[in-house]
Length: 429
Length: 167
Ligand SMILES: Cc1cc2nc3c(=O)[nH]c(=O)nc-3n(C[C@H](O)[C@H](O)[C@H](O)COP(=O)(O)O)c2cc1C
Ligand code: SF4
Ligand code: FES
Image (cartoon, rainbow over the protein chains, first blue to last red):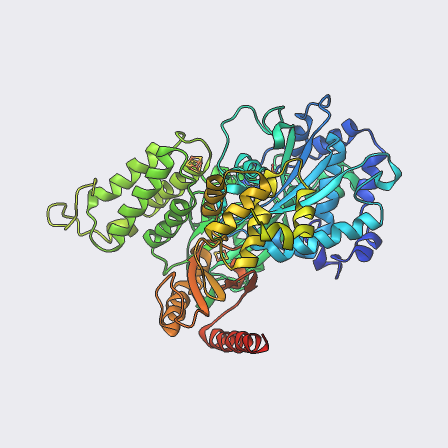
């Protein structure tokens, strides 16, 4: 397959503007500005592209929510990429940056936005400065700024650096952070697309880097042709980040529905090191449910709907592989420490829940837990589900519930089975 | 009141300000500039940034405290943030972090006596395919092991000494 997103694998140096332009670069934007904005949105709807940031919301429909009557509108590119195990947006911005810029401008034209802000996690310092230079190079070719390609449409593109906070990847927290407010989620409605809910209270589209990088191709070949790739519910390709216990970790762009976890892990990523067996898969970073590496799971196709059928999610497709030596209790502890650290503290169930989960799992790992502690974890996690202001609370709870559901023996192995004898303090310690 | 940041970095500050419809939105880039100037976000630096952004210093301080990349206390010349999140840990990052601390003779979060290195562990840095890895100030160093690390520490030490002697 030729790549749609990771095009540097087919076209070396596509990161340079002259090479990008010589390889259909900005043809999608040219096409877009020759159409009516509403026609661009229709094209995106026909592609059935779903957001690549995790939630999988249909992109064309998201764009169509923007009220055209408002004079000021924004596009915000979510380049915060902080989900554990995710490193695809980084590769796109490092190796095929103009495609993301072009995609953002297509979105901007479609909703008639006045400006694009690219919000990058602070650690992407070098990438942000590189993008600044590339934006200027594009401006010199009349691709950014005033009267883009002589169309009469004008739009600025800016970068903005975060400073290390996972929660700023959540779109409403991101908008607060960009506005110089504390990077905590907002109460919704109003949603970002609505007046009052977006950046500076103006209607705003927030899209992931990979999502937008699909737009130039969709405009070039047409939404219908794009939708021929993949399945009906999961069109196009997906960049899959593979990490953990594989011989060849990295990003693999695959047509959705054509490959299984088995193909991904054993063919593309070169299998498990040292001839070890595979124990479990985390298909969507630290925030999606873990699945045991059974034949049924390994033979599951990589699509949104197939992952759902095995009680997990494709999400941002950050696939972490755990070999047979991994203690799932330890892995659960790692994930919990992440969410405890990253909880913004705004709502009690998330702030306290992550604190208690970490405390109880630590005590179990130290061999100081009791059997009822496993039940306690279940209860704490269940109380977090659906009770928090943003999805981080669910992200913290769901994976833990799945680790216990699928690997109870890993937890019970740390407790000696006798509640009376175990040297534990009460739950309120 | 004098505001050395506003004077010294007028051009850069103006460039950031021009991106946004209000001054408050420039607070994050300005905190980076202040940190670059003073090495950390001292109370005085916070006040200067607040003044430029027309914000309350307590708000600026809470923003500085919200993020991991702002230094609320002085750090070593080289601030080493080692990723020990799950994918890196599956590739030995916990051991690497432990060995690095032992080699430098410091505890997690500590700084070497010569003020050269601070070591902290952090969450995923979007480089999980190149573990173990760390962020040194604003750059990534990837595919590490302790041998490579020791060479780097030597190199950085020499660079810092050469820089100090050149002053
Ligand atoms: C806690 C949390 C963290 C998130 N982090 C990211 C992120 O780093 N990158 C991203 O694109 N989306 C992230 N999202 C999803 C965004 O809120 C939003 O749905 C997404 O940017 C929409 O873009 P898309 O429709 O193109 O996927 C996060 C969501 C939550 C709840
Ligand atoms: S769920 Fe957690 S991260 Fe989200 S708003 Fe509440 S406290 Fe903050
Ligand atoms: S887990 Fe270390 S970079 Fe992702």
